[in-house]
Length: 207
Image: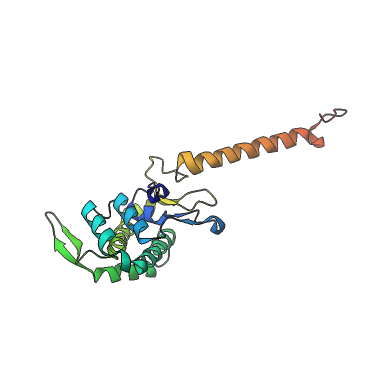
């Protein structure tokens, strides 16, 4: 099932959306969890970007005209990643954000103003994610964005730990794998040192 391909560890929908590309830093291992419009709708539903009615409507009404929406969403995904990891400009995200505003209007709710989509369409998930990403990246919370320390993973997240020292996207995933790898390397290095001629006493024979 498509939902098994999604991991919600980012602490924010925009970051979880970036993480729909698995093994980002290892091109030979890339696994894209967004290959169809149904994948995009399923992810958006699970992430709270779409409600149940909107999910059902998009699946039934626009499936045949949504191919470009997947490409646009994946382009937005890369724009969010580049903006989150960059300390320079974020033109691609700004462009996606501005384009989405043409399909929305600013309306007054019970307590505050908010963007509301003019109509529900295939670009709705990406438009909402662009607005959400810009809101995050222009807030103080953006300083807490981190990338998994695994050399191949590439997933990003908000570090909300008290010591601000979270290293892994998942302690039970990349964390355990890297700790096991480091342990193996230490044991291998220790064994090599023990068997090295330079570490043996005079007259001692190698086992």
